Image (cartoon, rainbow, N blue to C red; front, side, top):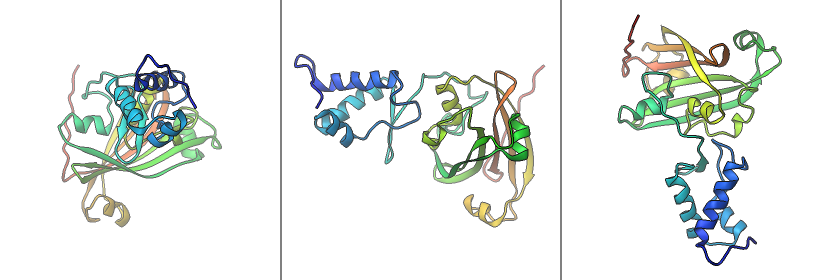
Amino acid sequence: MYQFKQQYPIYVQLRDILREQIENGVYLPGTAIPSENELSEEYGVNRLTVRTAIEELTKEGIVKPVQGKGVYVMGERMNRDLDTLSGFSNTIRGKNSNPKVNVLNQRVRKAGVKFSKVFHIDEEDEVHYIKRVCFVDGTPMSIEEIFVPKVILPNMNELNVADFSMYDLYHFYKINVTNAYQTLDIVTLDQNESRLLNINTSQAVYLFTSITYADEKTPIEYAKTYVRADLCEFTVNFSH
């Protein structure tokens, strides 16, 4: 059992222990720290003490509680212009709406012919695959399919890709996202995909296909996003 010093409040000491562990990489950005019960048992303190320590870390922006899931480690804070590269949740929050992401599938697969060409890797190299549905104020708004080479984020399967955007995760792990190329099409979906968006198969959706780059030349993400055309509109600014 951990021996706390008598002259300092225990929750302050526990806060400092957890902060040091996070700074030393024991708990990585985007992953959860142990539960209140686990920390209570490990350090021989009551849950209120643990909760108070976590609340202090939350105030500092070091961790982020996610209801029903746990407490997750944050990376360095980032200032972002919502008119530039931004994740779904950050953009929606900027419009004073409530975003939610439901992860349907998360696995590792072979790159194959297509993604070996996209990422300039071997066909046998592995890529992360994520499929998720994005909601705004409880309404399904889009379906995302995301592919990232495993070498870019080796521990992605341990990361919370529902409550952190990909741009947050790239920032946490010092990946310098610089630009993305995106195309727009109008398509219809099959019955299963249409059901996910609560539309019928005759309704058209926007299809955004994008490749995101780090340091201007390294492709790190390929994504296809199907967005409900009946609920969304987009503007593009041109300048010269």
